[in-house]
Every structure is written in structure tokens, then in C-alpha cells.
Length: 129
Image (tube, rainbow, N blue to C red; front, side, top):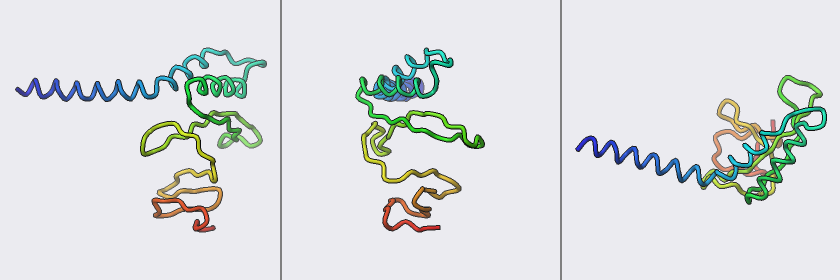
């Protein structure tokens, strides 16, 4: 009986993983296809990001190319691809960005200020440093 229960639990876990894989297979397929490109003087981060964005769009996944400055590398810019994920459903979404934040020591550190002990971000109520 215990073996049947264990096998049932394993089956549930495997089914969940298959569902998750199917949900994100377009993202994985797009990334794997673009990763085959070789970086050179003629194909760099912006080319990679542009190709990935096009592949994602074909899969129905909205994304943005962001130009970032890697930490510790002053005046060195890099292109990355950003995908917005709705945390309640895990689905890729297309929303207008009104602020950008990172999580640091239990706080949301945003361009418009810091949010502490708040579950809902309200832009016009954010505390300024």
C-alpha cells in the first residue's frame, strides 16, 4: 500500500512538471534556438537580444530589450531581454512599466523610492529617501 502511495505522489509531481514545461516550452525553445548563435564582432548582445525578442513574439510572449550597466562595470553597457511574469498566474504578460525595483534586504528598492513592509506598491504613496 505504501508503494502505491509513493508511486501516486511521484506521478502527481511528474504531471505537474509536464504541465509547467508545456506552459514555458515556447520560452525554452526560443532561448535554445537563439543560443546557437556565435558571438563575434558582427553578432553581439544587441543582436542576440533582438533575435530572442523576435522568437518570443512568434511564441506569443511579449518581451523588451533593456540596456543595462552590469554591476561593477562602469560605462560598459549590455543588452538583455526582459519578460514580465504575472506572479499570481506565472504567465508572461504585457503591461506598461511605471517603475523598476529590486529586492534588497527585505525592501523593494525602486527608482521612485523604497517600499518597506508593503505588499501592494502604490506609486504615489511611496516613501522618498
